[in-house]
Length: 564
Image (cartoon, rainbow, N blue to C red; front, side, top):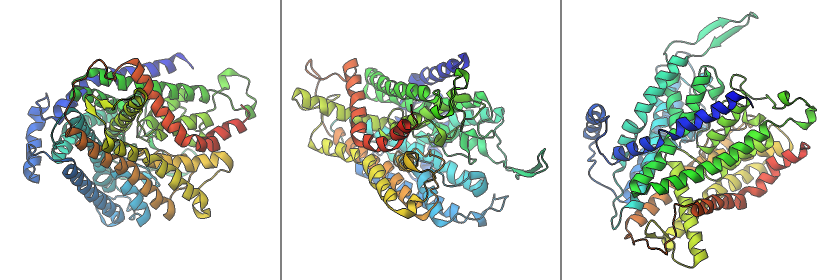
């Protein structure tokens, strides 16, 4: 590694951590309807939205009403996007005259973007019209991220409120999250990306002749606006097929840095939003400490592994040790590895290199980041409510060890809460192990795997892990555009999204109705080094017990077979 590699890593952490407390406070005030510096500009727009939709933002909902509104909104979004993709050939803003998508691929794509996964079995510039990219995918990038923020805020209210059934108003939360929480940041990032060279145009593709005399079509389009929300909303779907390795999506070192920062900027800020809700910033610091610990462990392991030479190549020069296959040469090994660790720690899925070419242990780090439920930073909103589920599990385990009823911030965890927690523990195993095993046991679906042995198994394992974790990245050698995988991966994405959201909202409703007991000297503190250690061990233990055998068959076996 060179000095600029260390500077990249340092700049990344500084740009993420410094604004996070201020931004977290801003999100708290926005979601609670308080006045902010954007209120004079966006306040009238917010009120017009309520008036046109007939919503009273002061009318609060129970968890069941909140959940029904959320499900209805997401179902409507799914059907609209599915229709746009099916009939895009007959719709405007299609200068390349691209036909509509095949129905199973359209179904998979619609489910992918509605669930904030952005799994892509297609190449954007060759498959989608400008209308599909904007009115379809970009809109879902906004509202799927806003849905995650809304669910998190409802959960925070459930923890912080007492003796009430009210968790807020879903429609107001969605409006505020989109209007104040996502749109201004996306506007700033999109303008920055245009400055760096990302296209934002309705012009036709440009035909060119290369130096070798071959004809080439250079794709254009309204890319900057979609790339901004794909990163800030932890969506990850690329406007172009090769995603953030494409020079039109990620043209410079500056765009690479700020896109990388934007992947986890909001997830980190929302941790401090939680501290504002519970009026105890020590809770936020403890969660951030756990997230950073897990991220640094995985990132350091991946960085070390990717700088090791392949033993079969007999490389003796240290300068040539790091294999460059699948790397974007503009950003180097460190830039690719840092992006890999970040995008799989968040439920983002964008890539600036080929994950299929990573060393086995680096690929394992990417898998583990997703297998623990994408809680290290996670998706916008989704990462923190997933982490809070692990916090409650850790509190429950601590209660078992000391022989008293577990409680978190004065709320006792009883049978109903524990059952809901157990339900969330089943989501990743079912989506990854059950659905993945079904795909691996059938000869037709296994034809999608392009490599024999452990690496081929890792390709399939990565696909179903990425889908269930709502990540969207993939090992590029896995050909998933088949009827079976389109539908089965859609089911995994649906389970990974709503299999968490519904128990989280039920938990929020249950906790909101409880009274808050004062915490005494015998209460287990949830903000010190001991709790951070317990939380970290809990996450690793649950993930290890669930997925270690499959990792042993995939990346671990591949690593050992290479002769390290």
